[in-house]
Length: 476
Picture 1 (cartoon, rainbow, N blue to C red):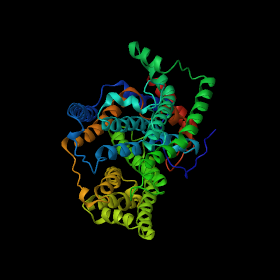
Picture 2: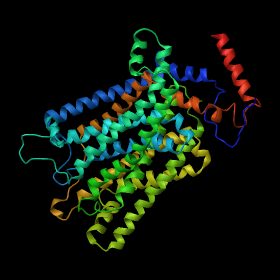
Picture 3: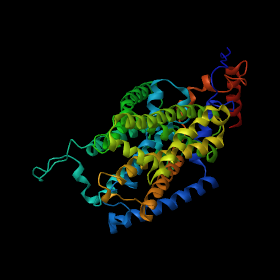
Picture 4: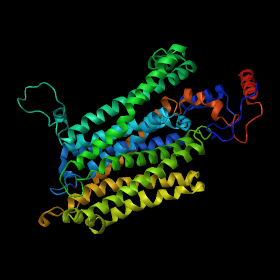
Protein backbone atom coordinates (compact mmCIF):
# COMPACT_ATOMS: atom_id res chain seq x y z
CA UNK A 1 0.00 0.00 0.00
CA UNK A 2 1.41 3.40 -0.97
CA UNK A 3 2.41 5.99 1.61
CA UNK A 4 0.54 9.32 1.46
CA UNK A 5 2.58 12.11 -0.11
CA UNK A 6 2.41 15.56 1.52
CA UNK A 7 4.31 18.12 -0.60
CA UNK A 8 3.54 20.91 1.90
CA UNK A 9 5.83 19.45 4.58
CA UNK A 10 9.51 20.31 4.66
CA UNK A 11 12.02 17.67 3.60
CA UNK A 12 14.28 17.04 6.62
CA UNK A 13 16.04 13.86 5.43
CA UNK A 14 17.47 13.83 1.94
CA UNK A 15 19.01 11.11 -0.16
CA UNK A 16 16.15 8.58 -0.28
CA UNK A 17 17.29 6.93 2.97
CA UNK A 18 16.31 3.61 4.51
CA UNK A 19 16.58 2.80 8.21
CA UNK A 20 19.78 0.85 7.61
CA UNK A 21 21.33 3.74 5.68
CA UNK A 22 20.58 6.14 8.53
CA UNK A 23 22.41 3.91 11.01
CA UNK A 24 25.29 3.49 8.59
CA UNK A 25 25.71 7.19 7.82
CA UNK A 26 25.45 8.44 11.40
CA UNK A 27 27.60 5.75 13.03
CA UNK A 28 30.44 5.93 10.51
CA UNK A 29 32.07 9.09 11.99
CA UNK A 30 32.53 7.21 15.30
CA UNK A 31 33.93 4.08 13.64
CA UNK A 32 36.31 5.19 10.90
CA UNK A 33 39.62 6.98 11.25
CA UNK A 34 39.19 10.76 11.55
CA UNK A 35 39.29 12.80 8.37
CA UNK A 36 41.93 15.41 7.59
CA UNK A 37 39.40 18.18 8.26
CA UNK A 38 38.65 16.75 11.71
CA UNK A 39 42.37 16.41 12.55
CA UNK A 40 43.03 20.00 11.47
CA UNK A 41 40.10 21.37 13.51
CA UNK A 42 41.07 19.28 16.53
CA UNK A 43 44.69 20.46 16.34
CA UNK A 44 43.66 24.13 16.31
CA UNK A 45 41.26 23.57 19.22
CA UNK A 46 43.97 21.72 21.17
CA UNK A 47 46.43 24.58 20.67
CA UNK A 48 43.95 27.11 22.06
CA UNK A 49 43.10 24.77 24.94
CA UNK A 50 46.80 24.62 25.84
CA UNK A 51 46.89 28.44 25.76
CA UNK A 52 43.88 28.47 28.10
CA UNK A 53 45.57 26.14 30.60
CA UNK A 54 48.73 28.26 30.56
CA UNK A 55 46.79 31.51 31.10
CA UNK A 56 44.78 30.06 34.00
CA UNK A 57 47.89 28.70 35.71
CA UNK A 58 49.59 32.08 35.18
CA UNK A 59 46.58 33.86 36.77
CA UNK A 60 46.52 31.58 39.81
CA UNK A 61 50.28 31.80 40.25
CA UNK A 62 50.59 35.57 39.78
CA UNK A 63 47.17 36.70 41.00
CA UNK A 64 44.23 38.69 39.63
CA UNK A 65 46.54 41.71 39.38
CA UNK A 66 47.65 40.27 36.04
CA UNK A 67 44.25 41.24 34.65
CA UNK A 68 43.31 44.70 33.47
CA UNK A 69 40.54 45.09 36.06
CA UNK A 70 40.92 48.14 38.32
CA UNK A 71 39.17 49.52 41.39
CA UNK A 72 36.45 51.14 39.25
CA UNK A 73 35.89 48.44 36.65
CA UNK A 74 36.34 45.37 38.85
CA UNK A 75 33.93 43.35 36.72
CA UNK A 76 35.31 43.18 33.23
CA UNK A 77 36.11 40.39 30.76
CA UNK A 78 35.59 37.57 33.23
CA UNK A 79 31.93 38.36 33.99
CA UNK A 80 31.32 39.43 30.38
CA UNK A 81 32.55 36.02 29.20
CA UNK A 82 30.63 34.22 31.94
CA UNK A 83 27.29 35.73 30.86
CA UNK A 84 28.16 35.20 27.17
CA UNK A 85 28.86 31.48 27.63
CA UNK A 86 25.73 30.98 29.75
CA UNK A 87 23.69 32.59 27.00
CA UNK A 88 25.17 30.29 24.37
CA UNK A 89 24.17 27.28 26.45
CA UNK A 90 20.48 28.22 26.29
CA UNK A 91 19.70 27.20 22.72
CA UNK A 92 20.51 23.54 23.39
CA UNK A 93 17.82 23.19 26.03
CA UNK A 94 15.37 25.26 23.99
CA UNK A 95 15.80 23.07 20.90
CA UNK A 96 15.70 19.87 22.95
CA UNK A 97 13.00 20.55 25.51
CA UNK A 98 10.58 23.20 24.28
CA UNK A 99 10.59 22.08 20.65
CA UNK A 100 10.13 18.48 21.82
CA UNK A 101 7.05 19.48 23.81
CA UNK A 102 5.72 21.35 20.77
CA UNK A 103 6.46 18.32 18.52
CA UNK A 104 8.63 20.25 16.09
CA UNK A 105 10.23 17.64 13.82
CA UNK A 106 13.01 19.89 12.51
CA UNK A 107 14.72 19.72 15.91
CA UNK A 108 15.81 16.10 15.31
CA UNK A 109 18.67 17.01 13.00
CA UNK A 110 20.27 19.49 15.37
CA UNK A 111 19.14 18.65 18.91
CA UNK A 112 22.00 16.26 19.77
CA UNK A 113 24.73 18.75 18.87
CA UNK A 114 22.80 21.57 20.56
CA UNK A 115 22.50 19.58 23.79
CA UNK A 116 26.23 18.83 23.74
CA UNK A 117 26.87 22.52 23.09
CA UNK A 118 24.88 23.35 26.22
CA UNK A 119 27.00 21.08 28.40
CA UNK A 120 30.31 22.37 27.05
CA UNK A 121 29.21 26.03 27.16
CA UNK A 122 28.18 25.75 30.82
CA UNK A 123 31.54 24.08 31.59
CA UNK A 124 33.32 27.07 30.00
CA UNK A 125 31.05 29.59 31.77
CA UNK A 126 31.39 28.09 35.23
CA UNK A 127 35.14 28.56 35.26
CA UNK A 128 35.11 32.37 35.09
CA UNK A 129 33.52 33.02 38.52
CA UNK A 130 35.89 30.45 40.04
CA UNK A 131 38.97 32.06 38.50
CA UNK A 132 37.65 35.50 39.49
CA UNK A 133 37.69 34.39 43.14
CA UNK A 134 41.48 34.49 43.00
CA UNK A 135 41.75 31.59 45.44
CA UNK A 136 40.14 28.60 43.78
CA UNK A 137 40.76 26.39 46.80
CA UNK A 138 38.26 28.47 48.79
CA UNK A 139 35.40 27.84 46.35
CA UNK A 140 33.62 25.70 48.95
CA UNK A 141 32.60 28.94 50.70
CA UNK A 142 29.84 29.40 48.12
CA UNK A 143 28.03 26.26 49.30
CA UNK A 144 25.84 26.19 52.42
CA UNK A 145 26.69 23.17 54.56
CA UNK A 146 27.05 22.40 58.30
CA UNK A 147 30.43 23.74 59.32
CA UNK A 148 32.55 25.07 62.16
CA UNK A 149 32.64 28.61 60.84
CA UNK A 150 30.26 29.86 63.50
CA UNK A 151 27.83 32.46 62.13
CA UNK A 152 29.61 32.68 58.75
CA UNK A 153 27.13 31.46 56.12
CA UNK A 154 26.52 32.27 52.49
CA UNK A 155 24.31 35.27 51.78
CA UNK A 156 21.02 33.87 50.52
CA UNK A 157 19.94 37.39 49.54
CA UNK A 158 22.75 37.68 47.01
CA UNK A 159 21.96 37.00 43.33
CA UNK A 160 25.53 35.70 42.99
CA UNK A 161 24.52 32.80 45.22
CA UNK A 162 21.33 32.34 43.22
CA UNK A 163 23.61 31.88 40.19
CA UNK A 164 25.32 28.95 41.89
CA UNK A 165 22.04 27.09 42.46
CA UNK A 166 20.48 28.01 39.10
CA UNK A 167 23.46 27.08 36.95
CA UNK A 168 24.27 23.87 38.84
CA UNK A 169 20.61 22.79 38.51
CA UNK A 170 20.56 23.73 34.83
CA UNK A 171 23.76 21.81 34.19
CA UNK A 172 22.50 18.70 36.02
CA UNK A 173 19.14 18.55 34.22
CA UNK A 174 20.72 19.33 30.83
CA UNK A 175 23.31 16.59 31.35
CA UNK A 176 20.59 14.05 32.20
CA UNK A 177 18.49 15.11 29.23
CA UNK A 178 21.47 14.88 26.86
CA UNK A 179 22.57 11.47 28.13
CA UNK A 180 19.02 10.07 28.10
CA UNK A 181 18.77 10.87 24.40
CA UNK A 182 22.16 9.24 23.80
CA UNK A 183 21.29 5.84 25.29
CA UNK A 184 19.50 4.27 22.26
CA UNK A 185 22.20 5.52 19.90
CA UNK A 186 25.01 4.25 22.12
CA UNK A 187 23.29 0.85 21.98
CA UNK A 188 23.24 1.07 18.17
CA UNK A 189 26.99 1.77 18.12
CA UNK A 190 27.49 -1.07 20.63
CA UNK A 191 25.74 -3.56 18.36
CA UNK A 192 28.05 -2.61 15.49
CA UNK A 193 31.27 -2.65 17.58
CA UNK A 194 33.54 -5.47 18.73
CA UNK A 195 36.07 -6.18 21.46
CA UNK A 196 36.90 -3.59 24.11
CA UNK A 197 34.97 -0.91 22.27
CA UNK A 198 31.82 -3.02 22.40
CA UNK A 199 32.22 -3.54 26.16
CA UNK A 200 32.61 0.19 26.77
CA UNK A 201 29.49 1.07 24.78
CA UNK A 202 27.64 -1.75 26.54
CA UNK A 203 28.41 -0.12 29.89
CA UNK A 204 27.36 3.36 28.77
CA UNK A 205 24.16 2.18 27.05
CA UNK A 206 22.94 0.66 30.37
CA UNK A 207 21.90 -2.64 28.81
CA UNK A 208 19.49 -1.12 26.33
CA UNK A 209 17.69 -3.80 24.30
CA UNK A 210 15.16 -1.73 22.38
CA UNK A 211 12.19 -3.53 23.92
CA UNK A 212 8.78 -1.85 24.06
CA UNK A 213 9.17 -1.34 27.81
CA UNK A 214 12.54 0.37 27.31
CA UNK A 215 11.13 2.70 24.67
CA UNK A 216 8.13 3.50 26.85
CA UNK A 217 10.31 4.43 29.82
CA UNK A 218 12.73 6.34 27.62
CA UNK A 219 9.96 8.47 26.14
CA UNK A 220 8.41 9.09 29.56
CA UNK A 221 11.75 10.15 31.03
CA UNK A 222 12.45 12.40 28.04
CA UNK A 223 9.12 14.19 28.48
CA UNK A 224 9.65 14.58 32.23
CA UNK A 225 13.12 16.05 31.73
CA UNK A 226 11.78 18.30 28.95
CA UNK A 227 9.12 19.55 31.36
CA UNK A 228 11.78 20.27 33.98
CA UNK A 229 14.11 21.92 31.47
CA UNK A 230 11.52 24.31 30.02
CA UNK A 231 11.21 26.58 33.09
CA UNK A 232 14.99 26.36 33.52
CA UNK A 233 15.48 27.99 30.11
CA UNK A 234 13.56 31.00 31.40
CA UNK A 235 14.83 30.99 34.97
CA UNK A 236 18.60 30.56 34.56
CA UNK A 237 19.32 33.64 32.48
CA UNK A 238 16.69 35.55 34.44
CA UNK A 239 18.71 34.88 37.58
CA UNK A 240 21.93 35.80 35.75
CA UNK A 241 20.29 39.13 34.88
CA UNK A 242 19.53 39.65 38.60
CA UNK A 243 23.29 40.02 39.14
CA UNK A 244 22.77 43.45 37.58
CA UNK A 245 19.07 44.23 37.94
CA UNK A 246 18.97 43.90 41.76
CA UNK A 247 21.75 46.48 42.14
CA UNK A 248 21.11 50.23 42.48
CA UNK A 249 23.63 51.24 39.81
CA UNK A 250 22.13 53.41 37.02
CA UNK A 251 21.99 51.42 33.80
CA UNK A 252 21.60 48.12 35.66
CA UNK A 253 18.66 48.70 37.98
CA UNK A 254 15.87 47.95 35.51
CA UNK A 255 13.00 45.47 35.30
CA UNK A 256 13.46 44.81 31.57
CA UNK A 257 16.62 42.79 32.16
CA UNK A 258 15.07 39.31 32.79
CA UNK A 259 13.10 38.96 29.50
CA UNK A 260 15.76 40.92 27.63
CA UNK A 261 18.52 38.57 28.85
CA UNK A 262 16.48 35.45 28.06
CA UNK A 263 15.75 36.61 24.49
CA UNK A 264 19.42 37.53 24.05
CA UNK A 265 20.53 34.15 25.35
CA UNK A 266 18.32 32.28 22.88
CA UNK A 267 19.49 34.65 20.15
CA UNK A 268 23.19 34.00 20.77
CA UNK A 269 22.62 30.29 21.44
CA UNK A 270 20.91 29.70 18.11
CA UNK A 271 23.70 31.62 16.36
CA UNK A 272 26.30 29.32 17.93
CA UNK A 273 24.25 26.25 16.95
CA UNK A 274 24.29 27.53 13.38
CA UNK A 275 28.07 27.97 13.49
CA UNK A 276 28.50 24.43 14.81
CA UNK A 277 26.00 22.89 12.39
CA UNK A 278 27.56 24.44 9.31
CA UNK A 279 31.01 23.18 10.34
CA UNK A 280 29.74 19.75 11.45
CA UNK A 281 27.68 19.03 8.33
CA UNK A 282 30.72 19.82 6.19
CA UNK A 283 33.43 18.03 8.21
CA UNK A 284 31.36 14.91 8.93
CA UNK A 285 29.50 14.97 5.59
CA UNK A 286 26.02 15.15 7.12
CA UNK A 287 24.42 17.44 4.53
CA UNK A 288 21.55 14.99 4.02
CA UNK A 289 20.58 15.05 7.72
CA UNK A 290 21.35 18.69 8.61
CA UNK A 291 19.55 20.18 5.63
CA UNK A 292 18.87 23.66 4.34
CA UNK A 293 15.41 23.38 5.90
CA UNK A 294 16.97 22.94 9.35
CA UNK A 295 19.15 25.99 8.79
CA UNK A 296 16.18 27.97 7.47
CA UNK A 297 14.05 27.17 10.53
CA UNK A 298 16.79 28.22 12.96
CA UNK A 299 17.42 31.44 11.06
CA UNK A 300 13.75 32.32 11.50
CA UNK A 301 14.20 32.00 15.27
CA UNK A 302 17.29 34.23 15.05
CA UNK A 303 15.24 36.91 13.26
CA UNK A 304 12.52 36.71 15.93
CA UNK A 305 14.82 36.87 18.95
CA UNK A 306 17.06 39.47 17.30
CA UNK A 307 14.02 41.69 16.79
CA UNK A 308 13.04 41.23 20.46
CA UNK A 309 16.56 42.22 21.53
CA UNK A 310 16.41 45.29 19.26
CA UNK A 311 13.10 46.36 20.82
CA UNK A 312 14.67 45.92 24.28
CA UNK A 313 17.59 48.20 23.32
CA UNK A 314 15.22 50.94 22.14
CA UNK A 315 13.00 50.48 25.21
CA UNK A 316 16.01 51.01 27.48
CA UNK A 317 16.86 54.28 25.72
CA UNK A 318 13.24 55.48 25.85
CA UNK A 319 12.78 54.65 29.54
CA UNK A 320 16.05 56.40 30.44
CA UNK A 321 14.83 59.54 28.65
CA UNK A 322 11.25 59.31 29.94
CA UNK A 323 12.29 58.71 33.56
CA UNK A 324 13.82 62.16 33.95
CA UNK A 325 16.46 60.63 36.22
CA UNK A 326 19.69 62.40 35.28
CA UNK A 327 22.01 59.60 36.40
CA UNK A 328 20.13 57.01 34.34
CA UNK A 329 20.15 59.37 31.38
CA UNK A 330 23.89 59.94 31.78
CA UNK A 331 24.55 56.18 31.94
CA UNK A 332 22.89 55.65 28.55
CA UNK A 333 24.33 58.83 27.06
CA UNK A 334 27.75 57.52 28.08
CA UNK A 335 27.03 54.15 26.45
CA UNK A 336 26.21 55.79 23.14
CA UNK A 337 28.64 58.73 23.06
CA UNK A 338 31.18 57.89 25.77
CA UNK A 339 34.63 56.35 25.55
CA UNK A 340 33.16 52.95 24.69
CA UNK A 341 30.96 54.23 21.84
CA UNK A 342 32.57 51.74 19.45
CA UNK A 343 31.30 48.76 21.46
CA UNK A 344 27.75 50.17 21.61
CA UNK A 345 27.51 50.76 17.86
CA UNK A 346 29.14 47.39 17.23
CA UNK A 347 26.46 45.81 19.40
CA UNK A 348 23.63 47.62 17.58
CA UNK A 349 24.95 46.70 14.14
CA UNK A 350 25.63 43.03 14.93
CA UNK A 351 22.47 42.34 16.98
CA UNK A 352 19.82 44.59 15.45
CA UNK A 353 20.76 45.31 11.84
CA UNK A 354 22.60 42.19 10.63
CA UNK A 355 19.88 39.60 11.60
CA UNK A 356 17.34 41.52 9.50
CA UNK A 357 19.11 40.19 6.41
CA UNK A 358 17.46 36.86 7.22
CA UNK A 359 14.13 38.26 6.07
CA UNK A 360 15.47 37.41 2.62
CA UNK A 361 14.75 33.75 1.87
CA UNK A 362 17.82 33.52 -0.35
CA UNK A 363 20.14 34.72 2.44
CA UNK A 364 18.29 32.66 5.06
CA UNK A 365 18.94 29.49 3.08
CA UNK A 366 22.52 30.32 2.13
CA UNK A 367 25.22 28.32 3.94
CA UNK A 368 27.88 31.01 3.64
CA UNK A 369 25.60 33.86 4.73
CA UNK A 370 24.35 31.79 7.65
CA UNK A 371 27.87 30.97 8.81
CA UNK A 372 29.04 34.58 8.48
CA UNK A 373 26.02 36.13 10.19
CA UNK A 374 26.04 33.56 13.01
CA UNK A 375 29.58 34.65 13.90
CA UNK A 376 28.56 38.33 13.61
CA UNK A 377 25.66 37.75 16.01
CA UNK A 378 27.89 36.07 18.59
CA UNK A 379 30.37 38.94 18.36
CA UNK A 380 27.48 41.35 18.85
CA UNK A 381 26.16 39.48 21.88
CA UNK A 382 29.63 39.59 23.43
CA UNK A 383 29.67 43.34 22.81
CA UNK A 384 26.27 43.60 24.53
CA UNK A 385 27.57 42.04 27.76
CA UNK A 386 30.70 44.18 27.60
CA UNK A 387 28.62 47.34 27.09
CA UNK A 388 26.39 46.53 30.06
CA UNK A 389 29.33 45.88 32.39
CA UNK A 390 32.27 48.06 31.32
CA UNK A 391 30.48 51.23 30.22
CA UNK A 392 28.27 51.26 33.31
CA UNK A 393 31.17 50.89 35.75
CA UNK A 394 33.58 53.18 33.89
CA UNK A 395 31.62 56.35 34.76
CA UNK A 396 30.08 56.42 38.25
CA UNK A 397 28.99 59.24 40.55
CA UNK A 398 32.55 60.46 41.26
CA UNK A 399 34.46 61.84 38.26
CA UNK A 400 37.66 61.40 40.24
CA UNK A 401 37.20 57.61 40.10
CA UNK A 402 36.40 57.40 36.38
CA UNK A 403 38.54 54.84 34.61
CA UNK A 404 39.10 53.05 31.34
CA UNK A 405 39.47 49.30 31.05
CA UNK A 406 41.87 47.53 28.70
CA UNK A 407 42.25 43.73 28.82
CA UNK A 408 45.68 42.20 29.23
CA UNK A 409 47.11 39.30 27.26
CA UNK A 410 46.18 36.99 30.14
CA UNK A 411 42.45 37.79 29.90
CA UNK A 412 42.48 37.57 26.12
CA UNK A 413 44.25 34.20 26.34
CA UNK A 414 41.74 32.84 28.86
CA UNK A 415 38.78 33.88 26.72
CA UNK A 416 40.13 32.63 23.39
CA UNK A 417 41.30 29.54 25.26
CA UNK A 418 37.77 28.75 26.44
CA UNK A 419 36.62 28.93 22.81
CA UNK A 420 39.35 26.40 22.03
CA UNK A 421 38.27 24.27 25.01
CA UNK A 422 34.67 24.36 23.80
CA UNK A 423 35.58 23.10 20.33
CA UNK A 424 38.08 20.62 21.81
CA UNK A 425 35.31 18.97 23.85
CA UNK A 426 32.87 19.10 20.94
CA UNK A 427 35.34 17.47 18.54
CA UNK A 428 35.95 14.64 21.00
CA UNK A 429 32.18 14.21 21.35
CA UNK A 430 31.78 13.79 17.57
CA UNK A 431 34.22 10.85 17.71
CA UNK A 432 32.51 9.09 20.62
CA UNK A 433 28.80 9.36 19.83
CA UNK A 434 26.55 10.07 16.81
CA UNK A 435 26.28 13.84 16.43
CA UNK A 436 22.75 13.46 15.01
CA UNK A 437 20.15 11.48 16.99
CA UNK A 438 19.74 8.20 15.07
CA UNK A 439 16.57 7.03 16.84
CA UNK A 440 14.80 10.36 16.42
CA UNK A 441 15.75 10.72 12.77
CA UNK A 442 14.36 7.25 12.08
CA UNK A 443 11.15 8.19 13.89
CA UNK A 444 10.39 10.98 11.40
CA UNK A 445 11.68 9.26 8.24
CA UNK A 446 8.23 8.52 6.77
CA UNK A 447 6.92 12.02 7.37
CA UNK A 448 10.09 13.98 6.53
CA UNK A 449 12.14 11.85 4.09
CA UNK A 450 12.38 13.09 0.51
CA UNK A 451 11.15 9.75 -0.86
CA UNK A 452 7.83 10.28 0.95
CA UNK A 453 7.20 14.03 0.63
CA UNK A 454 8.15 16.94 -1.57
CA UNK A 455 8.73 17.11 -5.32
CA UNK A 456 10.96 14.02 -5.35
CA UNK A 457 8.41 11.82 -3.57
CA UNK A 458 7.82 8.43 -5.21
CA UNK A 459 4.31 7.34 -6.05
CA UNK A 460 4.80 4.22 -4.03
CA UNK A 461 7.40 5.33 -1.50
CA UNK A 462 6.83 2.54 1.00
CA UNK A 463 7.36 -0.14 -1.60
CA UNK A 464 10.39 1.70 -2.96
CA UNK A 465 11.99 1.96 0.49
CA UNK A 466 11.48 -1.78 0.99
CA UNK A 467 13.21 -2.49 -2.32
CA UNK A 468 16.17 -0.28 -1.36
CA UNK A 469 16.51 -2.04 2.00
CA UNK A 470 16.35 -5.50 0.41
CA UNK A 471 18.98 -4.51 -2.17
CA UNK A 472 21.34 -3.28 0.56
CA UNK A 473 20.88 -6.49 2.57
CA UNK A 474 21.80 -8.53 -0.52
CA UNK A 475 24.94 -6.39 -1.07
CA UNK A 476 25.98 -6.82 2.58
